[in-house]
Length: 135
Image 1 (cartoon, rainbow, N blue to C red):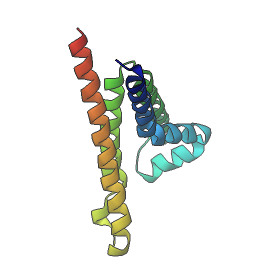
Image 2 (image 1 turned 90 degrees about the vertical axis):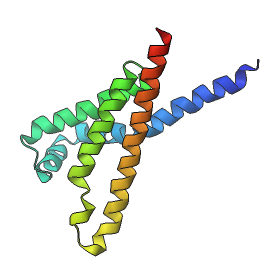
Image 3 (image 1 turned 120 degrees about the vertical axis):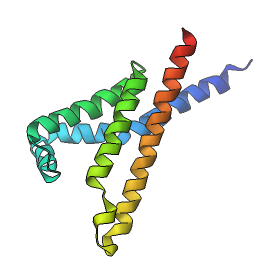
């Protein structure tokens, strides 16, 4: 059997996971580097105390992403980001409340984030299934 396709799929899998986590890695790093801005974002969305929520979001975005990328509790990291993404989407992208001129871009964002959450659910399901099969 030729090992090249198997290795290629492993690389593709790692790249897919990195791409899926990219926004959360970037968001967590940006928030950590600009904690004042992160607190302002939490205040904007009505989350109080803002410093606590900013720290929790940074820890979740970076920690869950690292779990996914490292494979250590990948299913838990993916499930955490799926739940976080759904919650954040319903908090921040309520397109149905916006005037018609602003509705379409917000709706696109909303449904793109639903797709991200679905991707994380697939990662969690596949990882959990693989771990059960390995027992």
